[in-house]
Image (cartoon, rainbow, N blue to C red; front, top):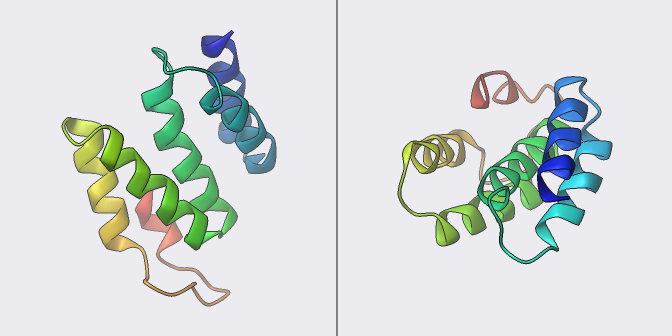
Length: 101
């Protein structure tokens, strides 16, 4: 079930359907911790970033680092957090283009 939710969330994210991706990720992250939880937590931060919801994105990514402080993905999340503005971006949101390559 968890891997199926993650697969759907990734597929929706890849299609730029961030709302659908977040919906699947919320379901995934409400399950007990599992093999898909780590990637799901990172992906929900990315999806919220792409949606322009920097407050929730920052919260999700900070939670990721509390849960998973070590690893290549943790380093990537730290870099993304550092690139995020501390206040919501202006409508141009230029930083979005470089935060998640």
